[in-house]
Image (cartoon, rainbow over all chains, first blue to last red):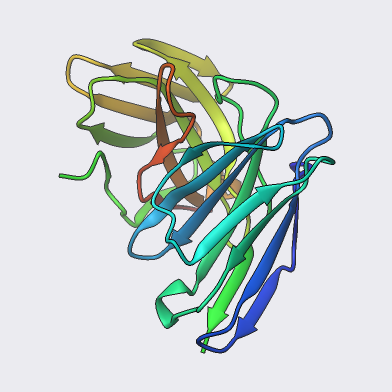
Length: 113
Length: 112
């Protein structure tokens, strides 16, 4: 167990809908990262927050947004969902920068039908 | 050209074999190199990281980085069925963005 908790584990929703994925980082970790994993693209970095502030952005679609709250948990919001958004979404946290020890959660499997 | 290339396999070996997993990369600015292991339906788990060039050993695992060739390797000695998983290499710049750039992973099966 990495100490990173993601909910829900599975999510099935229809195209056009909006969902929220939640992540609780390891106790004391200030950095939270979101990654998308699909069969054809592999693990792709979406966004990083550090102590509540957006730190880095990757290939995150405009339909996607994230935030980190004062208690350090993070949420990833996905809207106007398309079939191609079906993937595993992972949250990771790390205690420090440089990020050489990222601890990943179990992921949320999103299926858009 | 993708930033990080990794042969997806699958790779199947008998128990006790030495396994060699590799990645190549194109960005010479990468300074941190990691190997993650991902079991089916689980999140990636960090195995080892190396800063810049050189070797690092941890039990049955050895990581090597050859920056001149832009090539990294993970060796697993005395492989066990419990090593069956997908192995992902990841890299990061020094300074700047904290994002990890991953290879697509190599699926390894160790047969008893």
